Length: 185
Image 1: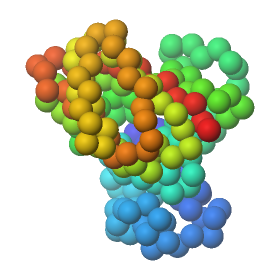
Image 2: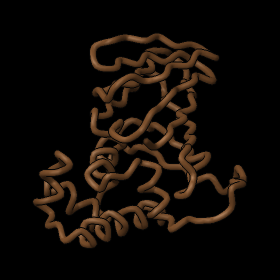
Image 3: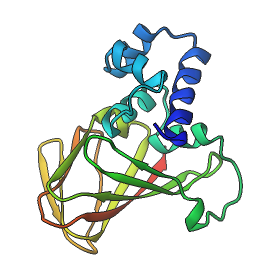
């Protein structure tokens, strides 16, 4: 596991312990097994995007908020391209670039690259306390929000409805890159 992954593992343990939660308590709140959380906290395995979203949600944080706390980042309103943290989902190869996120600012921007023929499913809990829109930069993206299908191409933008389990699917032969813009409510 690289240094960013170890920092994230330490932060997850710190968030859990700061709340006085046991592994079992966090597992119940997040819907993630106690064994998986233990392995993540010890730096033995890298969590998937879905698992991280569930853990962040249990702490009442967004995924970006969890990453920011792991990096202990505070600072400028200007975020240079080379200072934007990257994270790769070990299961799907999905790459998330945290373009902008500051604790004092209500907006977050992330750029996602979803490899060909891959999918990521996010639980409804990941959309609690936020409003979100997705804009496709390149490739094609299928978003299944609840039971509703949305097919997006370059330049298309979708504003999300009420919290629902959501699948992001790249059915094509090329990577799909999209922006996620969200506001905390």
